[in-house]
Amino acid sequence: MIQKTQPSAKALVPFVSVANMMRIIHHVGIEQMLIDLATYVEDDFKRWELFDKTPRVASHSDVGVIELMPTSDGEAYGFKYVNGHPKNTSEGLQTVTAFGLLADVYTGYPVLLTEMTILTALRTAATSAMAAKYLAPKGADTMAMIGNGAQSEFQSLAMKAICGITSVRLYDKDPAATAKCAANLANTGLNVVICTSPEQAIEGAQILTTCTADKQCATILSDNMVGAGVHINAIGGDCPGKTELAAGILARSDVFVEFPAQTRIEGEIQQMAEDFPITELWQVVTGAKPGRSSDRQITLFDSVGFAIEDFSALRYIRDRIKGSDFFFELDMLADPDDPRDLFGMVQRAAP
Ligand code: NAD
Image 1: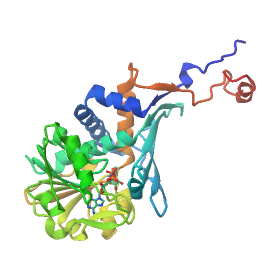
Image 2: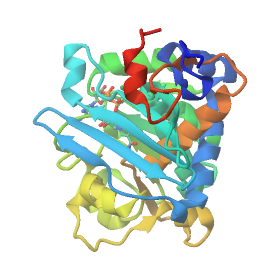
Image 3: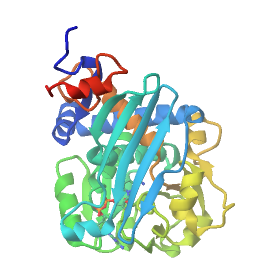
Image 4: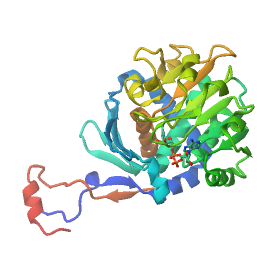
């Protein structure tokens, strides 16, 4: 019997490294990629009901959280590993890092392993803009971007590419973060205004994005700062005990969420009673429930990040790398000639 010394093609798993994710972005163009990802997310929100859904599995510590985010549409299964450590930046490390895997439900074999630190920033921004497309006031052209860390440029560019904003007003408690964000957004076509307070940042803005990282119930926006008719895109409150908005704002808003069972634990609405009324965003996307229905309404996307958005992003990358050289093949799956002779394979000399 001929003994294979190399793993067979079926056992090699495509792997998208950080360098290759950067090549994909440069090849596609970042705004086009945000538009494409938003389309994948929107398509999956339209078929929301067929997914397996569970709140993410979170392991909390005093300094952060490590989470697994699984879901399946019955044909593919995906999960993301992601952390959230607000103290990391003070040690020269990132708050959020991630990687993810997609598998074939029929065989159970993995079909893609990929970096997801960059992909998470892209999918979060694409999801924010997809939600704002349904919820923000018509003709919104200005966004306040409060929290100018790793996610902020992605959030700004997605709102430009998908919702058509032309101006972004930046504020961060650390002026160096704002300077970094402003420099990165120069030459993107956005009018960038550097602000020295959250009050200044929200002046004239129809979309208010909060994307700060702090392991506490913070008040980035207080009740009196939020006027009628705006859309709030609340990104940073995504863990028990980690929120950004005054409860009074929630009481005056129509709140839209991803998966209620997860958002009630992790989102801004953890501050409210268990039966606080919310609308599931997927129902707005399918047309089953209204999104924005009046000029004076305050809409609030209480984003925590849900597994289906990562699944959409994994699906996009799987499709995008087909026929390309944007990946390596990983020998991460043992593949004995006789599937029941794993031991025999181990006894042979390693290739
Ligand atoms: P980051 O650490 O790179 O940036 C956070 C920024 O917030 C920092 O520049 C910090 O100075 C600023 N900040 C903290 N407190 C502030 C305050 N009171 N006022 C103004 N600015 C303040 O983090 P990041 O990767 O940009 O992520 C931001 C937040 O978004 C995190 O809390 C993260 O957990 C969350 N997040 C949510 C999703 C989602 O799907 N909803 C996805 C990714 C990240």
